[in-house]
Every structure is written in structure tokens, then in C-alpha cells.
Image (tube, rainbow, N blue to C red):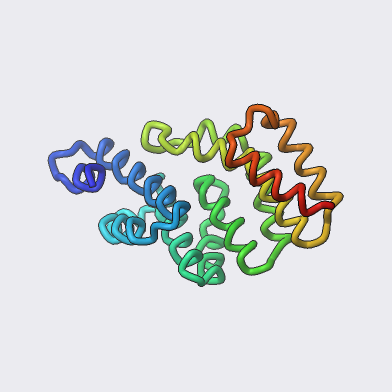
Length: 196
């Protein structure tokens, strides 16, 4: 609420308003991951004027939030249509993350795996991407590493177990199993249990 109020306040300097808008978009993405569509809808409605400005980070990020809203509302095809148009090499990393999940939801395993690979290969971009004083950095970095686990899950669901195991090896190289957070370790363990 504070971020939305700040970006809407005409006395807020433009650069600060842009940071607030971007941070609100990142908050909306996190809320969506937690199953909260209402917060994302509020953010999208209030930041609608920013949406068309693809030359600014928050404008491009709104595509990820809007597409993810479609995806989690049961229309991954519309999400894919929206996001594929935005791929120009300058799109925010979260556009690729949402696209990965939308493809997976549609059963387009190879397309989802291509996005997981893209995320894994662009870890440096996760650190360097501009926007809201790097407020998106932790989620971006996490997604580049967790993309290996997501790829393994997609591969396993396609009965490509040997390839899934290779992705887990890549995950271990990027993030030691001992250092993984418990929720990630449990997710990994549940996947490995399906291999037997």
C-alpha cells in the first residue's frame, strides 16, 4: 500500500515513483507465488498507466505480473501469447520465469525446458538487472538456480529420468544440497523419491 501510494503521489520524484512501481510489481509476483491473486489485481489496476511503457523496467515487469495473473487464473495460453510478444532480449528475467510456468501448465515440456535453460544460463543477469534498487535480485537469483530443479521436475513428469538426474547434478553444482533451504530440499527429495 505504501509503495502504491508513493508512486501515485505527484510530489514523489519520478525516479522514486518508478522504483516504487517496480517494487510493487515484485511484491505482486511474490503474492501470486503464495496464491494471492487479489493483491496482484490491485497492483495491476493501480499501475495500469505504467503498463504501456515498455522502455521502463516497471512497464516490462507488469507484463510478467499480468501474464502470471492469467496463468494462475487458468489461462496459460493467454499468458504465453502475451509474453512471447515481449521477448526482445531486454525483458525482465521474471518474464522468462512466468513463461516457463505457463508452458509447463500447457504441457509444452520442451518449451518450458528451454526457458529453464535460459534462466540457468543467465544467472549474471539476475544480479545485474535494473529495477527498484535491485529489490528483484533475490528472487531472480533463486529462480536461476531453482530452474534446474524445475527442469528436473518437468523431465521426470515426461519419463525422462536420466535427464532429470542430470539437472539435479547441475542444481547440486550451483547450490550445495547441504546449503539448500529446507523447503527446496523437501521438494528435491519428493522428486528423487519418484525415480525409484
